[in-house]
Each structure stands twice: as structure tokens, then as C-alpha cells.
Amino acid sequence: MTQGIGGLWDVPVLVAPMAGGPTTPQLVAAGCDSGGFAFVAGAYRSAAQVEEDIRALRGLTPRPFGVNVFCPGPHTADVEAVQRYVDELIPEAERLGVELGRPARDDDDWHAKLALLIDTAPAVSSFAFGCPEAATIAALQQSGSLVMVTVTNADEASLAVERGVDVLCAQGIEAGAHRGTFDDTAADDELTVVDLVAAIASRHRVPIVAAGGISVPARVEAAFRAGAVAVQAGTAFLRAYESGASEIHQAALVDPRFSTTAMTRAFTGRRARGLVNAFLRRHPEAPSAFPEIHHVTRPLRVAATRLGDADSVNLWAGTGHRDARAEPAAAILDWLASGVPSS
Image (cartoon, rainbow, N blue to C red; front, side):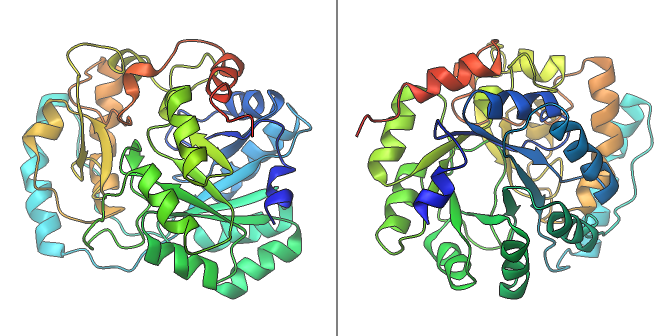
């Protein structure tokens, strides 16, 4: 199985899917054309929009690529807690001159995206926030896709292996943006990527891609020594020339004002790591309610980006954000690949 996964790339460095703008067809193509591998970010987009991205990407590169989508979780949001948080955000909306969004519940076009993945058969169909049922995984594999699931602890890894996945993406606590936990309300083991890879490798023979804090060659080497067959980096590519991350997001990664990262639910209602800014500090007790809170705060984030207000927008970033380079994606990938052990 490892040979099957490894046959998708010449260099075992993967460009992570970064939903909401940073991932562009140009970034995915650059990662693949450089001998690595990259993913279309399918979250927050309709199946039709994802299909457009796939079509655009296939016009840019003949190389294999993956598509990542979010698994819908159970509807566990506390309606009253959500409303209290909405009320808390009214001053933010007034300050930015917009109306808050509605706390809508949706499945991110889940069934249509599954049908699209089966129909288009990307080299890898990747999932976060949960694990598809065994029958769904089998259908994707029969269509020609390998299936990868993001896990954050050994129990999630065991469930994914039982359901027949081809590869695990082991996401350490260092990772930027959303935690891939199956249950956002459960206690988080907060394992580092090295410890998580080692824990999974001791139990399972499924290939492991290490993600989280992969920002310099030394971190790449450490992940391989722990048992990974490849690494996946996101924050390291946020300042790449092909990145679609906003100017304020890219600048904040190296701005001395934003020196630390923290987990927060303030922007989307799901645990995610970002640079600590004023909005994050003002709203430390946001409820677990995804995607409801995501929809509520979206107008705030759009307005803040338009106004260049870095203190009012989600600045997703991993712990290695200071290492992010403003270079072509190919150069960043080659630099990270220098940490891959020779044997």
C-alpha cells in the first residue's frame, strides 16, 4: 500500500488543502509539478464550484492531485449558547458596518461532493472532521481514488483503519487552521505530530502522512524518523507566490505584533489554531457550533479583510508561521524536501 501512495509523487512533501482562499489551482499545480503532491480545498464550496476547480487544475497540470472535503458532524450545537454568542458579536458588526450572518446548519453539499469524487476520481479523496462509512470508502476506491482521513489521536486512527482507508493524515497539535478531530466537543489529546505519528505507527501498518508544524527541514526529518512516509505542510505555503491568502494574512505571519498562536472557536465555532489578535482575545468563550458560527461571522471576516483590519479576521497559522517564506511554491517544496532522510 505504501508503494501505491508513494507512486503519486517524486518528493514526499504535500501541500495541504487550505479552504477559504489560500488554496488556488495555481498553488495545487505548482505543488504537483514540482514533484510533490497537493490538494484542491473543497470545503466551503459547492460541488459545482469544486468541479470547476478540478477542471481548472486539469488544465494546468497532467500530474495526479487530491481533493479534500469536510465530513458533516452531528448537530450538537446549543441553540441558546449560539444566540448568546451572536448577541456578543453585535458590537463587532456595528463597528465594521455589516450585519451578522444567520447561524445556519448545513452539510457543505456533502452528498453532491461524494458523487463528484466518485465521478471524477482524483488520485486521493481526503477527509477531515470525521471518517466516511466503510461503504463510501469502498465506493471511492472502486472509482480509482485512494482515501485519506485526517486523525488527531490513536482512536480516530483505529476507526479509520477499520473502515478501510488507504492512508492516514496524522495532524499534530502544532497545525494551523481547524483541528481535524472527529468530535469537537471531546477532550483533545493535544499530541505533537511526532508523538502522534509514532503512536499510530506502533499500532497500524497503514501509511502515515505527518501534518502540523512542518515548517523547516528539521521538522520534516523528525516526522520521517517517527514513522511517516510523507509530510504535509500548509502554513509554510501561505506566503507562496501562488497562494490566495489575503495580503493582511500573509503580512501577519511575519508581523512582530502577532507573535503567538492559540486555539479558538471564536471565528467558526470549531477549534482552530490562528495568530492571536484582538478578536480572538475578545471572544475566548465561543461555543462549539460549526458551521453555525462560521456563517454568523463570515460578514465580519469579509469586511475586516476588505478594510485591512488584521485584528478582526481569522489569521489561521501553525506554530511555525515565522518560517513561512515569500517564494515560489516550488522553492518552498524543495527546501522542505531537503529534510527527507536519504534512507
